[in-house]
Every structure is written in structure tokens, then in C-alpha cells.
Length: 259
Image 1 (cartoon, one colour):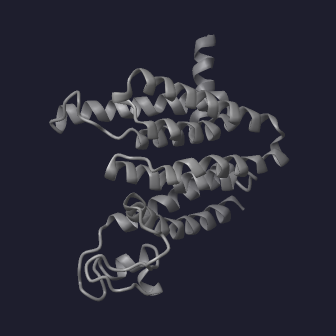
Image 2: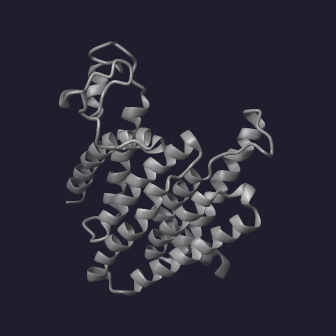
């Protein structure tokens, strides 16, 4: 059953990943994600459904437009594949749980936000702010199978992580963007739903990943202390770590302290 669900979610992720490519390109530019239909960025020829089959179309066309031969970035199939893998991993993690749709939503919006932040160093409000009511609504469905306690913990965890990031931004605005603050509350919802340990691990992991990459940029990419590196992708990667392994990692840590 789990394997079937993971395969289904993986295919769903591939299809959603295809749409996310549109979101990633158009949202930062203030363009509609619906109109005009998908088209070649070189010749602007409208693509047919056969040109938009996730992964398969790119491979079959060998990364080039069917109509003008212009190159199609490998990032398109990479986004599709990454989304499919994330959906499968979450399906294996949660199974046919009532909160699975909530975490699939986070995976989808997280992929879009991470790549937009890498591209333009900005987390658009049009994606982060609606994620609050959507996430709260989807997590509320889980009350039926889990009771109200995880839901209340999620709400409190979202507030806690939001307050933490807001304080960081208030005291050191040069090192923390307001978009990161807005995203933090959403991630806090999902992490705290699982446990306080998952929240702690997910929040801490973001700074670990950011620190490692920051040092690497300074040592190997000619960066300096004032080099700006978008933090949103590290927040999302940290949240993924907290979701997948946060609770057992936190338990293992507290067990070591108890010895």
C-alpha cells in the first residue's frame, strides 16, 4: 500500500513540478501563471500537451525546442524530478495519513520559494502569505485522526518560530530578510505539528546549512563577510530535515544528555 501511494504521489509531484516551473519563472515578474499558455522562451511558439509531459518531453526532445531548436534548460526536468521525489518521500513518511496533503502542499510551495529566492533573492508575499490559511486549513483536517493537541501545538509553534525570526530581523535586519520572517511561521506550523523536537531540529538545521554554505562561499567562491546568500532555501531544507528526521534526532540527543 505504501509503495503504491509513494508511486502515485511521485507521479503527482512530477506533474505539479511542471506547473511549478511556470510559477518560478512568472511570479517574480508579476505575470499570470495561467495566461498565456506555456510557450518556448526563444520562438514563443505555444507548446502542445506532448511538449509538456514531465521529464519525458525534455528527454525525447534532447533538451531543445521542437519548433526552433533553442535550448531548454535542464532545470525544468530537475524541478519536476525533485518535486516528484519529495512527494514520494513524504508519502513514505506519512502514509495515508490525513495530514499528507498538508505536507505535499508545503513541498510544492517550498520548491517554488527556494528557487525564486535563489533567482531573485526574494520570497514573494503572493506565495508565503496565502500559505498561512492554506496550511492551517489542511493541518486542521488532521484533527480527525490525531486529536486537537498536535493542531494547537502547530499554531503555537508557528507563533514561536515567527517571533524568533522577527527578533532576529529586528536586531539585525542586514542579516535577515522580512521574507524569511514571513516564511518562518509557516514552517513552524508544520514542524511543531510533529513535535517540539522536530521544531527545534528544523530551526537549528537551517542555520547549520546556511553557515556551512556561507563558509564555503567565502573559502571557495571569493565571497566576503558582506556577501548576501538567500536564506530561504536553507530554512526550507532545515524544515525538510526536521520533518523527515527531526523527532528521532531530538530524541536521540535528549537520550545522550540523560546518560
